[in-house]
Amino acid sequence: MIEIKSKEIIEKYLDQEKLGKFLDLVEEANQKLNLFSRGIDRNELMILAAESIIPVQLGLISPDSGPIIDIGSGWGIPAIPLLLWNPSLNLTLVERSKKKADFLNLTLHRLSLRANIINSDIEHVPDGDKFQMITLRQVALDKRFVDALRRHSTEDADLVYFGPIVDEKLFTSVTSTQYIIDRKPVRTVIAAKFSKKK
Image (cartoon, rainbow, N blue to C red; front, side, top):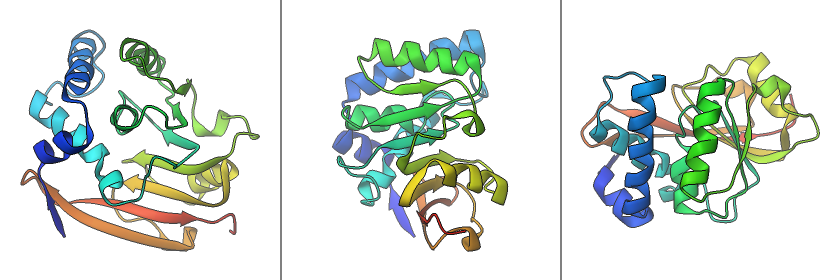
């Protein structure tokens, strides 16, 4: 178990002015588009941004990681903070909601960031696209979904997953790290070796 303070991780890895601009865009869009629960305040948004950088702090994601595909990017967690940390990441964001995909496009433009956005779900990503790393959060990893991910992974690709325990039989190795961020309940980030072997 590790304890993390969001303020410290943000100060170490992120430009606070750009992060503030991102969160301003999120809050403004949420009032119009209802991107997420209105009960999430600015402090919780900061925690989610800091949480996005935990894989960097743990050494799971480095400046050389990629190409990376982020599944279910929503309003940009963890993808946008990762791009704020390292704008040169080769990152593709997959989001099936058009309003969220449009928000992501606008956000990338306003923050002068580059990434490929696919307004679809993983099943409709072109089969020729292969990724060395897959990131996702709070998505149920059943066999059908993992098989869809496998079609888009390179040999021995990595999965970085924010969420509950995964079925270890679907991967060649699974390492989970539990953490507490700003005294919130225990959360988990999982690193799995994403073998092509079924």
